[in-house]
Image 1 (cartoon, rainbow, N blue to C red):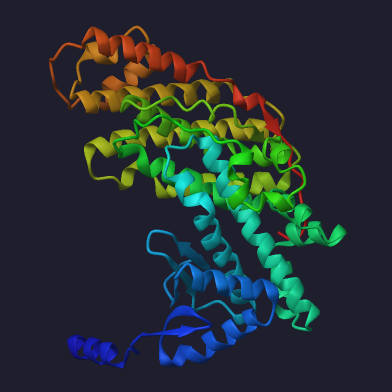
Image 2 (cartoon, one colour):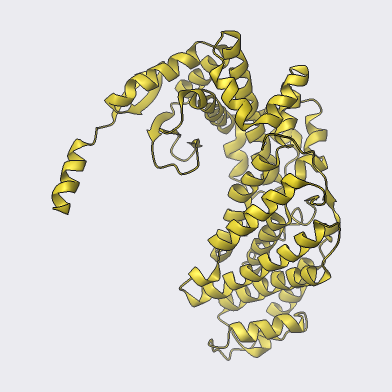
Length: 430
């Protein structure tokens, strides 16, 4: 019976057809065709929409509709050169969302792809991720305003509902530059991108082989061409400001853990992580809310109890402790205080992560390895506990001892960024 039901379901599924619409490659079913025609015709009715369609045609992107996109409304996939939009989006949202994704397509072809092919330091990746998102949303605002001028108000009303800080910043002077900077004032959006672009990739890569290519640090003027920097007042100055660089402590700590792993794999220490200013939590309701939200989600997603491999359990048990340390520091910061206990625990977890990775890489689980002079006693004790079931009697080479002492010194000599908290403006409507 189940087999027959599945066969009937598969038989009833519509086939996706491929065709050209406004010069763009479209992949859609017959029942979706009218929706796509209406969508593309709407974009074709305004200058910014026509530019989006022209770019989609010029760069031969594939446009697709999908239903299983989770919370994502749509995305541009540079590897497959696809723009994929969620079927669940209403027309009013998809109109400006498609303009947004087409802008990402253009950014990719104006130099973003080449820039990100390098081993960029964290500070540069953060700058690019944020600036390209802010720029794409600015393009969406322009489209919404052009539709408004035609009497088509629905896209703007939907945009206003979801992104009040940006549209409020734009409306003050009608300035795209102000709208671009307004993106950074939205704790909800900035925090969600930190989680998806920074925290998740960093923690997922803790069991990777690292990247031993030289780190590359780019300046704002080097990314301006694919971030719409020409329409932002003092783009270079703003990109170097605290407001543009500030992150949550969880983000910084997650990348510091990855940095420790990468160093153990022969990579270069990324100093840009420790220099990132932290969001001020005291008297900042929005920052507190999203701080708590992503701490909770990170705990759930990366809990060591979900790991079956013993090596992964050890690595992610350190992540569990890192998250707890961050929670202690953030709890104190909400009251304008410090947590010396949390700060010490966080520093120790960076060292634990580094040493544990070296032990796995060198297949060396000796007490000598765990008790090197450069390793704090608390970390040595935790290593002995975690690696009690691993055995190996190879001695530690002098070269490795020297490297580990140097790397651990670099990891623990970082600026105390918990003193570098900065306040971002809050906005209503979240």
